[in-house]
Length: 257
Image (cartoon, rainbow, N blue to C red; front, side, top):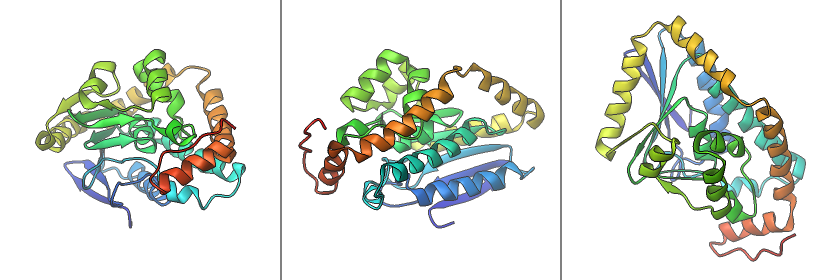
C-alpha cells in the first residue's frame, strides 16, 4: 500500500491514511481502502478497525487537482459512484469501524468518517462539507448521511454555508460520539476498539447488520440522485470556475450557470 498504513494489535487493525499533505480522499486512496477492507473482512484475527490520519489532518477533503483530469459529467458521476460503493461497503461492514478524527474531516474526508460506525474527535477538529464553495455538491453520499446524523435543519445549514463545525459541536449534534484532547484521541480510540474486540464477533456482526435496517427507504434513491447531480454540478460553468479558483487560490466568480 502506498497511501495507507495497516498495523494489527490485540485483534484491532489500525488503518492510517498517509497521503501528505492533507490525506485527500483521492481515487488512489479509495482503491487502497477498498483492498484493505477486503483483506480485513476475511481475516479472523481482526475484529475491529480503527481509521485515523497521519500528520495534521484526518482527511481535509478530496484531491481537487484530480478533478481537473476528469473531462465529462459522466466521468465525474462515476468517481462519485466508486466512493459511494466503498462507503456503503464500510457502513454495512460486519466488523466495527471507528474513526479517530483530528485536525479536519472535510468534504470527502467527512463522508469517509460518516461511513464509519463510530466517530471520535478532538475538540478543535473541523468537520464539514464545503463543496458548495466550489460550485459543486457532495458526491460520496454526504447529502444522505449528514441529515441522518445531525438532522435536516443542521445539515442544510452546514451544506449551504460550507462552514465546518468544531469537534465539540459535532458531539453535541450527534455527528461524533466522544471528544478528547489531541494526546488522548488515539489511546482512547484504541481502548474503545479493544473493548469491543472482547465481544463475540458473531454477536457484533449480527448487531451491525440489524442497525442497517434503520436506514430510510429513500436513502438509495437519494444516493443515485446525488451521483447524478455530482456530475451535473461538475459539468456546469460554475463548477469548472470553482475548481479553477480553488487551484488558483482565489475566490470563485460564479455566474449561476
